[in-house]
Length: 431
Image (cartoon, rainbow, N blue to C red; front, side, top):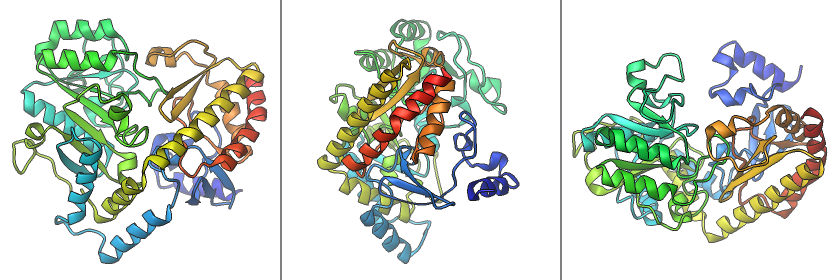
């Protein structure tokens, strides 16, 4: 039995499914998950001592690469002073200032510990600000696992949604209306029918949890137009894309053309530590306690180790970092599609900034979750395990984005590229 198999067996005896987040279990690709011992730069190392070129990047936070010396030093210095105080620290304001400097629309910022907390709080704020109950989200967009967001796609119009998880009361799910992403007609129809009841629209401004599905030109602008016209708020959930696709997230990447009322940030903003944030217009954010009637609290919110990692990461993430990440992503994406094409694997590669993913068995643009679900996952399973055997770790799901970092230099990308032809042939055999 390998070290990974032993670790998984041990974990399954005390942890449901052996993992603390479902996708880690390799459920969609099969096999034994790799238990990581340590990581550095562009590489992770499992409990058997094997090295893997990492294209997961802790699902986004590792913008600089793993264990960046300056980030680690900042966390160590903070830890030496104490792990948690239950009282304010100057570092919290410093991180909030860095966020606002990158995204000036975030006039006020509240730090929390997880992306789920951030989106939950943003939605509560929107309801408190508008006095309305209904929330609109898009099928296939993930905004954390709070009850009201775990709903399956319905008709895409005004019908009540159904819970997508056991334990979610139907009455709570019914407060969330689900429409297809990039469906101009559906969102217009929904607002025409129920616009005066809608508190907010929450969206991934570029969808990255059904595979990468960028917004159609004008779609985010339409969301701003409709929410403004009907007195609802627009929430950009940038937990994943924020501070990764550009120094000012998707809002900056799209040219600052849309002005959301609220943002949620996570992943990069905490530098790999448990930290997320809500930001937005001052008059909305100041509805939060202790100034206003919308309650939110967290014993570990603004934790000094997490804020230290976030501050160091944002300070280090300069234009050169984004240039290197963009170049690495472009080179790898081009090599992936070239290898799959050479092997005769039908596919569609889609990008949103430096993020990309592959839809297997498709050759036309994917605009929404229903279209994403038509892909064939069996070629990806074969491709995934061929790459893993070659020492390249990919996301263990065909519906996830691939991540590179500033540590993925030319030599690292060349190593990944060298593994692609054999993996592409494996995918072709499984198609």
